Length: 498
Image (cartoon, rainbow, N blue to C red; front, side, top):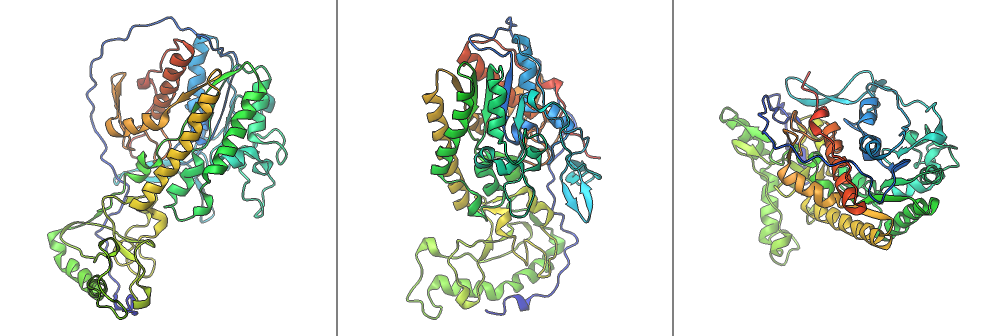
């Protein structure tokens, strides 16, 4: 059993296509709608003369894995500001990134830009070249949008987020540093509060998502980046308190945290992504022969006959064998939570089940050979690419706890603050989609109905408009306003494959 790896021969699976492909809908027949009754736009008991937004990537307009001009122009905050203009809202200044393709990353010395769909596989790939973010050269004191991708409650509150840039400063965020009022000294919350104090009348506050999102999208492989409940409460109340204290008359809306596992990042690559045809039956047999020794060890453990065992383990501690067949097959994954049989040379691996969530990023590594055979077949998919059923439940528990804190903050400040229940809204949207404005939106990536951009986490322009409308609906109820909703059909969907 200890020579488990050595029994494998090199098998090339050139016929397996692992991609993040979704069906591209060629034609959509709109549904004829009855025009809504048009009300005269009014601000109700709120004032929108100067609107200030603070948040993370969702407020900034991050889209397709990058921050770029088209995303900023269609950000949640920018779309809200356009509607606020109808009820007396003023100029809304953003720290313009002035980039067509944005910054997705660097690979092999080449700067990569935002994601696009590549034909014929409909797989998201980066655009080349991308653009490294540059300093904002506009008037920092006139900014209204303080949305920064990647910011957590902690990094929104500390000056290190603005610099210096060094290996000793993990809090550094260049997307804040580029427009920080005083990089290395100012804070994001402080800058937003200063803008609100300078004549601000209304604000939106949507922080906290990244206090759980980073942990989830990394397959729960780094517990150190998950904020504790106590720290979340302290930091959230400090950040919201700073905004409320900045201007005693300003009103605003706060939003809670959606269940991060409802997004396409966890729904696009399926647990049973591997498909073998009848013509590949011999290959299936070869794979099963390769796992024969592993399966014998698992069967012996379940029977309680391994050396040192005094009997079979409890039902919930039993391990599963690995088997392949013609047709759909589950991906082989690493799972550190299964009972360890390392003493017998049996690795902690298993095949995924329908309750496991495979990340979108797994699509780029499944089927590739890192030296131990194709990943997902001979070589298990690493835990950074998987949320197991246990981890999914833990993430939900943490999101629920954070949302209780947010709800309590809304109740404690109800005279000045309203709550947008994004958690419930996104959950419903993930189940049913949205039909309106003679279009249909769904929680997928594929155009034309997809409401999410190609990174699988952030909305596209229509998705941001849908979210903005939910803010507007909550504002209208809270402050007795009649701000018109955005016509989603006027916003662009994801681009077709190129």
